[in-house]
Length: 91
Image (cartoon, rainbow, N blue to C red; front, top):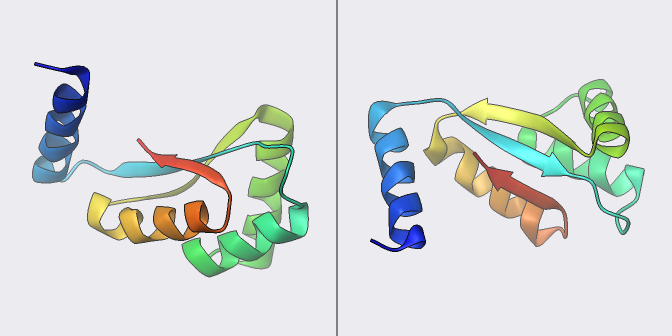
């Protein structure tokens, strides 16, 4: 079994069991605070205060969990963040 197949199997198992997943946003040297805040408000339904707090955590700690929930809910949100040029993944 390849690594990719094993990862896909783990993701499918997590979805099947209803485990809460997380979108983790990572720091980069490209995006501005304003852009990150705007995207968190748009994609993750954050308040401006939540989005600002998350952007500061990402800046200083390197990453932050910005949304939790079922995989089906997080996938389109993570796609929006990725399409906006942010570095994020569902774990």
